[in-house]
Amino acid sequence: MKAVEISDTRLVTIIDKDEPKIEQPDDVIVKIKSVSICGTDVHTFQNEHPFVKPPVVVGHECGGEVVECGSSVSSITVGDRVAIDPVFGCGTCRACKSGRANACADVKCRGVHVEGAMQEYFRIRECDVHKLPESVVDLELGAVVEPMAIGAQACWRGNVSQDQVVLVFGAGPIGVAVMLNAHCLGARSIVIDMKEDRLQRARDFGALAAFSATDPDLKAKVLDLTDGEGPHVTCDAVGHPRIFEQCIDLVAPAGHVVLLGMDGQPNNVTELQIFKKEMSVVGSRMNSNMFPTILERVAAGQMKLENMVSHRFPIDQATDAFTMAVEQPEGFLKAMVTF
Image (cartoon, rainbow, N blue to C red; front, side, top):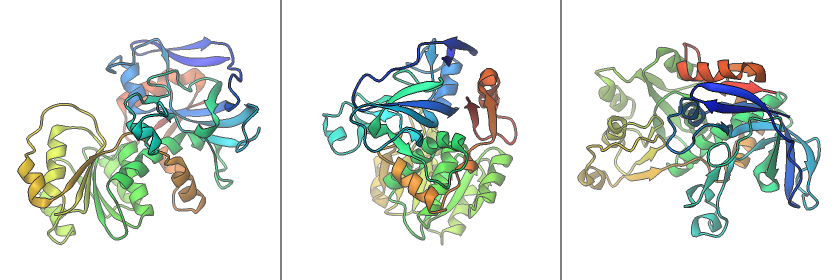
């Protein structure tokens, strides 16, 4: 079978490998239909990821059709159209037992810590396979359930609820996913980004407002839209010390600050700032069992998966897909490789 391997810096190779076989009773073999490209994949493509180094088969945002099931599999049958949750933990630690494998000290994500799904057939555990609603006619859209689940996780961590205002820094795929999930919960959103095409997309998707990050009156405009108190929730979907500082500065008293971006640089936030507002500052990593939530919202007509995809490429044009994900031309949101 064919697989897409990042074999060197910015070099994508189509390789042949053996098809996976059922090994455990709960194994499921999925014929992959599509894999969308994440920022993590881009860092690997550029050889900039801290611990994922080529050669490697990447891909953790994926969907396809079940072609074989192990002897104990009961919730999934051959022919089911599915999305795949790539996150799994050790299964025995406190985080895993509480249903939060994403916080496991030994957490793994397929396509990052272990082999990914950018191949024609993929072996996965039954518990990680989720049936798509009948309303999802386009099977390729199964690949974008995962980034939507990241947005749902961020909203859960931020305790987003009806009639709140959520401020999202970053209108890339993850920022958009946060915004769309917030809307499903009855909240309104303000979106901040550097690129006008992304700001316009946020407006088209129903944002209350969308402002340039370089707007000198940004704080005044945000406060004006929130009765002078600030948003109930602020979210950094970029990962930059200055944005974290803005999230702390702008959030309303007793509000939530959600950190989705990763940077690691020092920032100028003080304990006093957090103390005075009695705010909650939380991290949000990958997702913890959010696939059912996303699929319920899709089935109810609250969420359109097609909003997440801007470009599709067949497998033999995978290099073009990764290159576009790096360059991010106007109108780009997410690239998908299709089989």
